[in-house]
Length: 248
Image: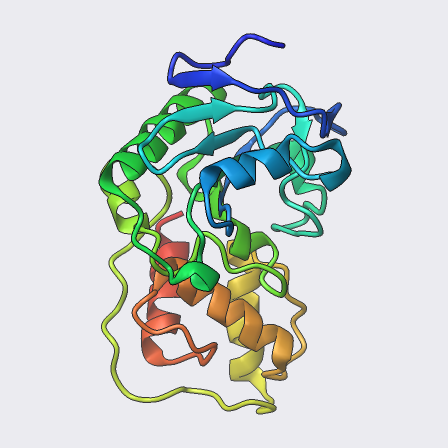
């Protein structure tokens, strides 16, 4: 047992799936997930099962109750194989928050208002204590775009931003079709890849609109332009990306 890191926690339920942070040993980002399981209880059962080898620092149930499973000073096992900028051990530099929601396999139900209010409050609390920058509040799909979609395009990042949580701009309106086609090559593709990499996505600058590029574009859209998530870089996607970079 350990003491909760914040008064927002309603219950501490220790998970054995944790360890020492590596390297600098200080969290500098938040990673938001959905549980992707039918119930919050089933997700918590998995996260505290030694055999599962997965965990998170926090779980927020549908009613907004906050459970803490791993102390913030410790390394929880929530990010998996991932990358953001030059960092490839996101578990050592992040705090993970699992948000109870079954995701697409469960019909992608909306996140309840009470739950989102709790997410906002917890992110505000953690960000203030660790002095996290807004652009360091990320989706699991941002850091592992080839493997993960959570917390998904139905997650209300705009509502978090309105409360001062996360980096956000109003997405540029949809218009026209894709600017680039799959397998297209050339300097414009290299420029798009450079912008995505500059923002933080793990993407090689090849000059070819290949499958990894399409996957990263879809991850970007899922977080920042959720109206249409198709992996195709249209004018809205590129303009939104440029606006975000200009706002850093």
